[in-house]
Length: 222
Image (cartoon, rainbow, N blue to C red; front, side, top):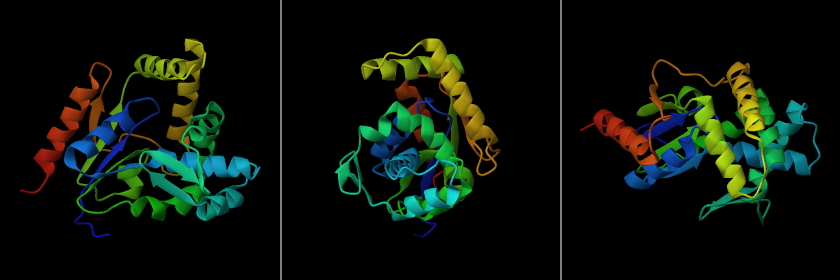
């Protein structure tokens, strides 16, 4: 798709709120929305269903290329089955960052992510949307929050799902995910100089969305 189609790339760590912000920004602008994490979750679930070792990069990449996926009205479909809930399980969540660290898997999913770039525009969230997938994005944002704030958000999500979790365990899990995401050899998560930094620790969702929209309107061609 032509580079003339604008992209807003929002990257950041787990539980930073980037998905909620990105989805609302897309809705406000009438743009398409790409939750790149969903693609990696789908690839992880596919690998688990095939009982593939998470250390076998070639097999993981093949599964990522072969899986049949669809996004329908907010639902995720894998091989003809609605897996919206399944991909959000803790088992899949824990394994996804390991699968996403594979260079072969990331290469396998690169084209699929870029296919989402259609007029009038796209808002994409993930770990490397601005650095790798859409390096020519009109606006790049690194959205984060302090670990205690992110842990509180994550803990609340788990409790709302009826899943008990100790806060100390949630904090440790986030720290481990941050380490894996920021130290992986391929497309590590980090704040690149061309991305605007947005700390949402003390911001409401409305304020964070408003800031991204303001930045985009300032950067958009007249």
